[in-house]
Length: 566
Image: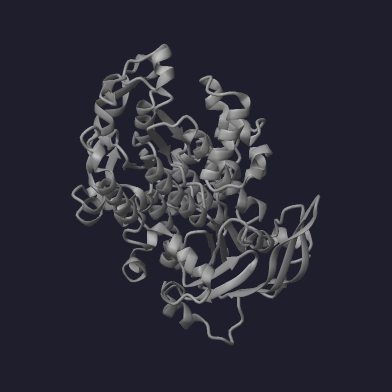
């Protein structure tokens, strides 16, 4: 559905399906009220797709919670109005909201892991919406649930309906949430970051299905995302929120080609999906400059020397009950040049994380060689393997899970030094302060705990910890996939700066080719445990050879806007 076709359905005088007027919301905290939404107003008409775009804390999900009638307990309504089809929702009685929610307003939340009931079969959860609203008797609701699952793009719907959520992949669980959101035939669908945690190819397939159903039913959609590329591809109008204020409102063409607010311009600059090559060029130009200024080192350390080589790696896992073995990595070879970044890209289940664990020697390969500084470490154990940690470190996807919540930041950052008996307690504290400064955080965080920091700050702490024992190689496993594009851009810039300062080598693991393009010198594309294509980043993006690589490239959002935005 285009902006033009949406405009034909309504004009300026038409009554909106959803009208938000001067909405003012705040969170009640122990330190007093904190403003979350500051006088936001907008409309959504029948058949129109509207995106709410902004980073975490901008207020977009808070607004959605009020529209759906499920605000957090500590949220206070300070003023304004939310009207759906003539009915005021703010302050409405529970029976009114219960009648609207699910039937007239569908909702697709972000995280299916916490949104689906783990002890109810999938089919029951989809059918439950019809039963609660007395739209179908139990037997007919079951059949309708199967149809809804099929329409959401789920093959073998009867099998899936009989399974529990934990038996489905992340992509299938997200499709179940779409089926739940649409089964009652709502007039408005709210989709709150419905695919942000999924691989780009899975994201594309799910959003394609969602678009088809929205168009088929001619329903309105309020699409919440932090990614302008996704919003540009999938909606008719974009609303940009910053710190609870609406700072931009226009069609995708207007917002991306002629942004009026500095914050919108910053979001565009930070979105890797909207640019051809940005940070990779910066890395290469810096590396060239360094090579020129350090030619005296070239005889002792050739620039093309490998910090890591994986040669013909195979990793098999025994299946239960003697059913054979599952080959997670299959004759894989790749290298990381000293002082550069190799990106390893593939979908969930492709074997990329297992490959990273083998590089770290957290896993022992079934066969093959792991070469670090010219030595095969594939079978190292004991103290030799422990000492290897001084040369190879890791930064993981979820910094909150990776950081001990009971430790102070100072203790977390200096713990590797203490583990290897490096320095005194006082000198380690000094070193922790130096590292915190290197990752651009204030010294005041040293005595705080991880729970007091944002996601981006926690990831900086994880990077500082990895740097503490001065490794030569860092394995970065999806280090920015859980972050907003603005914070993501800051972390990528930080990694580039640190690489140039310390001549670090990175194995950068990701499902997102747009992010890998931003930082990597070389790219290896992995599928089903095998490298399907590898080479220089520009060549992979400009002249992909393998169909799977082309599929990954086609799945990058914002495709139609990249040429003009870059």
